[in-house]
Image (spheres, rainbow, N blue to C red):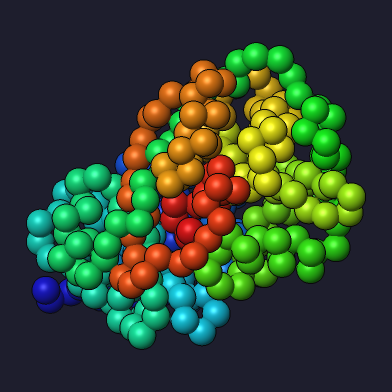
Length: 284
C-alpha cells in the first residue's frame, strides 16, 4: 500500500466526511460536525492515497472506558483494495481496552461480528410528517421548556442515564448549535424528557428523544416537529423499546433505514423504556 497514510481529520475534512455520509444516504445533520469535533478532536481519521482522501472512520473516546465507531466509509472506487480495513484497525487500536459500540448497516453486520461485536438491538429510522392533533404537553402533565433555560448540569445528569459515559462537551454543543432546537419536559421541577431537532440533508432528524412516558414523548415530538416547517421528521428508534416503535408508527411514520447497535462486550444497562430515539448513529 505504497502512498497510503492515515491522518487526523482537519476542519475541511470534517465537511468532506459529511458530504460522503450524504452520498451514502445517511442524511447527516448540517451542523453535526461541530458537535462531533468537540466530543473528541482526535477521534476522526482520514485515509489518503498519494494525498487524495479515499476513506474515513471515527473512533471517539468517551470517559475512561467507552468508545464509539462511526463514519466508516471507503470511497466506492477504492473499495476492495484494503484501505478500509487499514482504517478500521487504526480506529479500533485507538479504542483498545474500552467497551466499543457502533451502529452497523445491514450489509456490514457480519463483518463486525467477526471483529468481536455482538448485536444489542436495532435502530430503525422512522420518518414522516406526524399525523393527528397537536399536543402541547398539558395532556402529559409536563411543561415543555427551552432546554437552554435549565442548568446544564441537570441536563448532563439526565443524559447520563441514557449513555454509558459522560459526554458533557458534546452535549453542550449538540443542544445549542445554531439552527437546532432542544426542548425539555419538566414535571414538578424534574426533567422527564429531552429532545433535539436539527436540519439535515433531507428530513429533519430528532435525537435524542428521551421521555418518561409515551405521552411525554408525544408532547416533545409534536413541539419539535413544528421546527420542520411542515416537512418530514426522522427518528432513529431502538426496537428494544417496542412501545416507541408502535407509538411512532401510530403517528404515520414509516421505516426508511436500519442499523444494528452492537458492542464488543455486554451492552450497557440503559432505561430502554424511556429511550424513544438515539442521539446519533455516528457517535452514539
